[in-house]
Length: 113
Length: 111
Image (cartoon, rainbow over all chains, first blue to last red):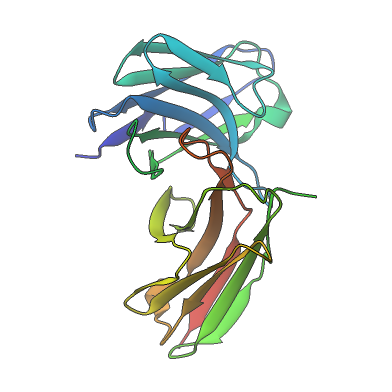
């Protein structure tokens, strides 16, 4: 079984809809991250969380919100989706105090029409 | 200027070739450096960390030049399975696990 899972894997939605992307991990890591990837751009950090009570904005948090429901779960919400949020979204985890290595989920491909 | 810059490629090489990718970073205080590999439509995976003294893992060699702020990845004896996008990744702040990703260099190895 995969250590970091994301649901759904693909989603097509309409402008204005609320969308939630979910991430779960069995690695026991404290730190979790949400990124988006667009063609020709590197992964960009949306939000990150270093533990259940710690949530931080990343580079491009506008239009997004997150919830860290438990150590193993970190969800990303688009309150009112817009077409330029069409992208590939990745969740990642890392150990606190360990190496910088981040472990990624398989990604969610989101299309906003 | 982007924080991490890479030549997007694609690099089209025959099997057995040696190919090198470079990456530059803008923050001179950056602490740690990595190469990740990303297959088409898949998640990035760590290929190797990059150490100041340079490091090698089989056919892959990574080098760091702090004075010039660039990182390189050399792949020897390319295999078809090496076809992927290679992401240069920098931790600018050390200790906070916040990584900055380059846009990637695409490699296509052909028979």
